[in-house]
Image (cartoon, rainbow, N blue to C red; front, side, top):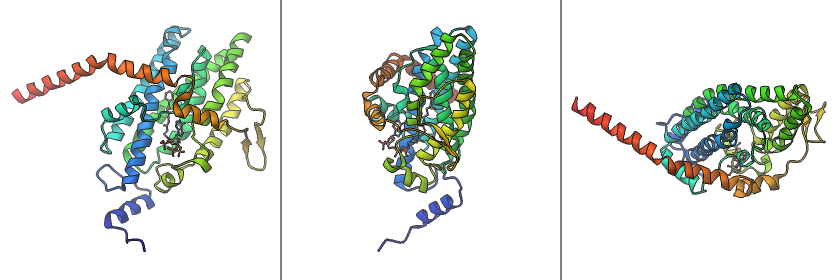
Amino acid sequence: MTAAPTRDETRFQELIDRDEKIEPTDWMPDGYRKTLIRQIAQHAHSEVIGMQPEGNWITRAPTLRRKAILMAKVQDEAGHGLYLYSAAETLGVSRHELVDLLHQGKHKYSSIFNYPTLTWADVGAIGWLVDGAAITNQVMLTRCSYGPYARAMVRICKEESFHQRQGYEILLALCRGTEEQKAMAQDAVNRWWWPALMMFGPPDTDSTHTEQSMAWKIKRVSNDDLRQQFVDMTVPQAEYLGLTLPDPDLRWNEERGHYDFGQIDWDEFWDVVKGNGPMNRERLEHKVRAWEENAWVREAALAYEAKQRQRKVAV
Ligand code: BYC
């Protein structure tokens, strides 16, 4: 016989059923808290590690205008990391702890950022495909049952929409340029298409958390359904660019009302998730190095804060 739900459990379930938000001071099941910390931390780490592939092109952007836009975009990603670490902190874990776990290799971040950015066209492909996939996922998360996470997503989605357009515009310029430039755009899309599809996570049948996360309304749509949404949205955009998506099985299915697409290489996905992708080591080493080399900035900020506090007490 299962025990009757407690008052806390009943109230939590009522809030979920009524589509109301759970707030930091509300009671919540341990599993709900743990799932959110895991997902929000992974999300925050992804934003921060995600600065590296594009940051790699800031010094080599083709024009001053492109450089200014790219710098602003990369800086936005740092901001997203900050909102997300703050959202995680409302669940009783500190940013410091989470960053530490990332640095020790005990926390995951999105598989997509373990691929290299070989040409300027990769910056366009990331904006269009990676930010495009991120928005598809994050629009759903604006309806997440946990208030602070859902609200952080609203602002992040607005900024990601701008990022996606800047990426698309980079590719559009290349596709309307010389044959060499168009070939560069095609090559970037060939390399980023499949990893972008992997961003949505394993197929629903292999997903550990989807069922419970959907019952708690943390996730509102499953990995496979989001992936399908992304494919359906992106194919016409590729056609407009005049680029081919590297999948011979990609075709419109009249009966389903969706595009069919080919098999994703899940062995490659899990290999990257386990740390064996082309750039895993480099990404983490770079992150840890930046953390250590910039310790003086944190120390100076803390010293300044302590001084300000002393002054306030004196006044
Ligand atoms: N990469 O049960 P599942 C950005 C893991 S950054 C690595 O389906 P869940 C941007 C998963 O953690 C945007 N690992 O999990 C920044 C789990 O392992 P654990 C990043 C992955 O959580 C800079 C296991 O596989 N977006 O926009 O229900 C420049 C089983 O998966 C991945 C987010 O983080 C992956 N791709 O669903 C440009 C969105 N997929 O934890 C752009 C927030 C799965 O049990 N996150 N795993 O050891 C989510 O929505 C969900 O966490 C996921 C996965 C849909 C990703």
